[in-house]
Length: 328
Figure 1: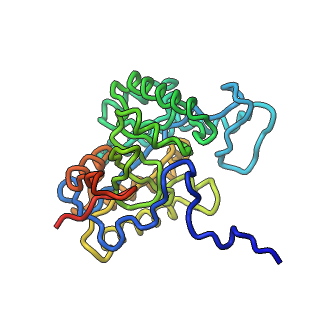
Figure 2: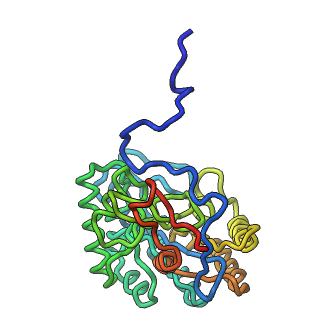
Figure 3: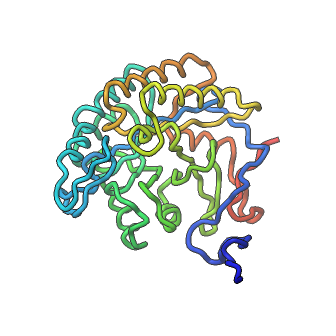
């Protein structure tokens, strides 16, 4: 019998496109970081603002997006039900979320699809007035792994120009819908980004190197994320979202060491903008604000606070994908 070498391979394939894998990270000794007001946990709320930029027949895509409340799909024509769910997010849901953020006085980061802000400029104006961060989330809400390198480069360039026009500020952070093997290279090559969030592999920011340059990564998470209300094995009720968020924060505050970490919360106006789900979010914010060692921060502020406390290792002394070391 002939053996299949797939089952015995021990190392990565040489010269495969994209960033190298790093399965070690900080290991047992992450850097000790403190956040705003000397907090131990930085809670980072992300609003994924995509409504109006998703794939639809109405936009000439010849396909409808699949993130819908029920497992139904219309093929070969417009799906008005899916379109109207997205419209709920931009018409009603986003404003309910803004009311919650205003009442609690918490800053947030928008992962902003540029076309979505173009189609609802009042949202761009509101987030700018609040001082929220608009990070790049693509020109449209598209899969970057489906693009050629040149097309992805153009999409990033268009997104930067559009977000700067609608909000008055160019994005300093980047997060795709689905990254490609070229995304990080293109973001670093562009030169105006402070960080990207196209990874789910840490509870802390970390430094890596891209083409001989230091590059900061601020990881995201799909755990305390409202997409789990409608996709896969996720939240069956708002109470489950609240319990998951609460348990995440409780563990990060008492994680068995004195290391400060970050907690990501992912929201979508068409999902968490619904009343019952918004109520769970508001209750969690109130719970978290009851602790002196918890701070709500924008992603860009987390990135800059981390960079101030954990500078990158000089590249001449670093191994590929090396991270900041704990200060003595």
